[in-house]
Image (cartoon, rainbow, N blue to C red):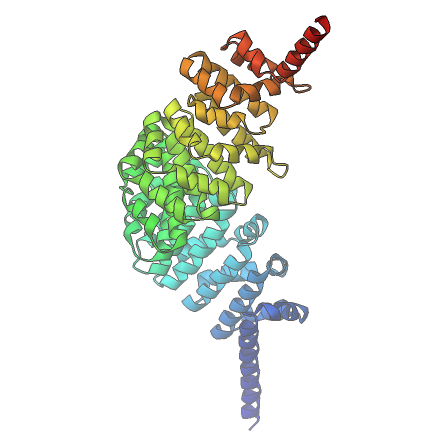
Length: 509
């Protein structure tokens, strides 16, 4: 009888522990419960349950702690302060697969918040255990470990290097080859987090054969996997010509370009980013993308997207156009100017408009024909407006000024220049325009008459006579293209001079 009473008491204790830890884990799912759980001291009560002799209680405790830590960096810090990490790491090596998943989740929830917390996870000895988990048979355990390694590596170069030094990369490459989609996604994401920091880290991935296994996955129809694959390949390609060539040699084109038309917006954005990271390096790589129909695909995507999703395509078109007249002409021929001008007109964030202004400058800077194509869109006045707007960032003003300088310096179409002369431009930009007008008029006899009839010459004379004008030197160059009497006739003081002569004649008579 006494034995039964004892057993019942212990059974009741076990049931209460199970009920408690399950309830806390469930409540921790909802953000509105977190503060109350924190105030009630949930973390301190859960810690001993990690050492419980009942596996299900251990798992639920680890899950509950992970959900709490996932909520904020303060709670993640509490996990470190309560010395919970060593117990989790120990259990990763000793316990069953269910507990390993929960422990991996908890470590990831701590590591994700900051480099300092990620370093605390490493200092607890987690890396070796996590890499060992990548060799487990259960894909869920591999996935939990991969998540955690990706979060650690994503923070900075030093943490990513520690993940590499622990031998994670070859195992992550193997995870990419696993049949489970979710594991493939997380492994590709972790590889991306490692590669993004330095050329050396990206080279480690290349040496492990990651590119040859990632590239074929571009044609996989799973949107989340396509996103991560595009991202990882882009992070590898961005660092150097050699790394970009490794990616290209894996036959990512034209597969990558078809991703620009994929329904998922993040797939499209990451694909555009991959294209940008390839084309920015050399004319040869840009030409390869153009030859595969890349400009048309970028233009279509750029026209359909908005905001930060549009940015990589805007920049890719600029990089392509920057290399040569021929490549810039390809952008013009594929109607690439329209979406770039639309970005200038429609976007509200300065960095997006600055990128569009820069790309337009790269298209127009090559020859008079290129400059005329840009000027004919009417975008130059928009660039002038953004350059002089009080609310424009310094970067936007600088990019607009440089784009205007690049285009105007090559612009020989007098009507386009004439249209600018009649605008109220800032003095620095107007001087640039007038200097170019002077160069064009010096070699264009027919244009001189046209400039007079349009009212351009008269407008120029008024600028020279404005108080404190710094345009006189540029105006004098224009005036030197005309007979002195014509210049005098169109000067603002000419009518005054005529009146004075008439008055003098009247007095003399």
